[in-house]
Length: 211
Image (cartoon, rainbow, N blue to C red):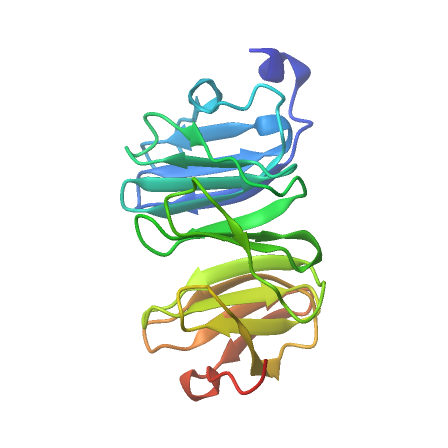
């Protein structure tokens, strides 16, 4: 009610739909809404998320009944019941996460500012930092159809892991611009979104050649 009274002055920062009906948006100051009718009506999700300080939320990721939210000051929230309830995942990192991925029920990756990648192999109870060769902010990530993981950074690089996120190698392609999102097409290619528009990376190019 307070946010409604303030008016539409708080930006949405992430959106994701599970299907044609069920979708979620998150944004500044902990803003979180969901729809069950394709966006015709929206309802607050904020009372279900343990985010009393109203940390900004940058990403919502959906895999079946699992929902991951990532945000500033190390904020990570996870639902295993389709958004009926959320639990906070505590990490050793207090900086901003721009995204998180669930590789399976136990293996989680969170990534964000200055090349920070953190991995948990026990559902978020313990975390290990994954070292990268450059401290460049990571903006997006995706689990590919073959089980590998690709992360994108603001310099235009793509980094790929074939060992469940335990290590990453740089792909021999560069979009030449800061990347903001990526997705995989049915034929296995990647479509990248960035400051200069869209680019397509063919499946044969998704082979890591250097650390």
